Image (cartoon, rainbow over all chains, first blue to last red; front, side, top):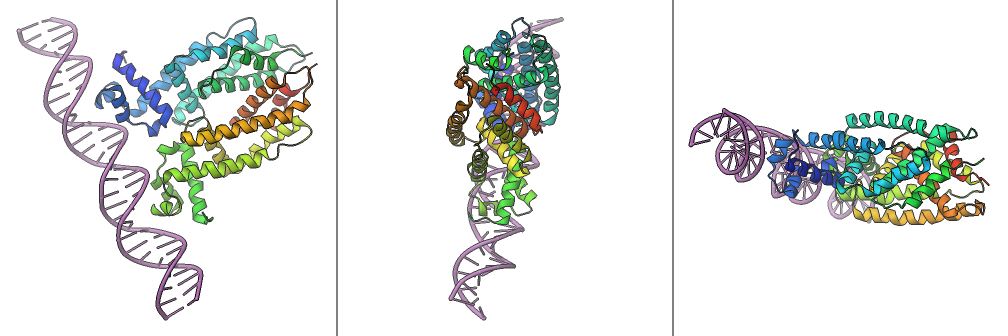
Length: 186
Length: 186
DNA sequence: CCTTTTATAAAACGTACGTTAGATTATAGA
DNA sequence: TCTATAATCTAACGTACGTTTTATAAAAGG
């Protein structure tokens, strides 16, 4: 599992193919071809096609999620969440493709049940986290359950727009939409 | 193109396979097998695999979208949109799978560029429609652009939850979230 | 009742897939 | 320098794919 330049390059190309053609539509031959290595080299670094796919999700995707969510702490929550989403515009090509592939698996559009279950556990944790972050900032007239749920739904959609649909969202756009939900309105 | 029982059955099974395994992961043999017909029968009713996939999107998916959006007219917009989303819980199995497959194509997770372009045109039209529906109901202190944008983003997420993630959303949940965005707050 | 059309299937064609065997070259440690 | 390990490739194996050919039953029309 030591990092080799070729090994990393294979993952880069694989992520691209899995994204574009799906697991079944991607072939080891095409990947080897684009990497400019022979076909068995892929089996030298990865047990088989499935483990190549799984490693991308289990390691690269969850690393990315961890890094992103670790910055979820600040006083001003509108700024916090705006930045949280806005930063996705600046992901590297590779990171964005990994993220996109992860969402594909999360929606059960690719990958298998095992990966999906790992993601469901993650989702549950991150939802609790959002509750803890947001609840203290809400006025007593607001129902925290509803606000947090609605915010999470909006956030997930914004993330999907940037990462999956490859759109650029400006900081203003993001802040405006988050503010619709989080602004106090007594 | 006349409706034959077998022809419809093939589409039913195909939609299921395309959903679960993607275009490339689905095989004509598997489909024929599950339909309990011989393999060439699929070529009797459809030119090839691609046209089978395309027909599901171009005809069944867009029929579904049309039927759904045609009911977008009412005085009370919160009720209107609540009902609009809530009704998705009651889609037939086939309709839900068609819808799910359509979203998969919309997110460029399957299908080809041609189908995606048809969807982008549709999206543009439906966005304008939402603006016309919502704008008259907003107070002058609200920026219609932002409210409509945010609402559409929330709606798309709710639809995705029901159709793609296969969740049941209660009428109350839906109304609560839509109200967070649409409630007047002067 | 014969003929045309519609509906069906068995078998095969060529191709491409995931994967492995076996051999060869480069690298590095003693 | 010799040897062991790591990195690489050519070639092949068996399988499964999309699609077609060809033939045969069933249905319909006159």
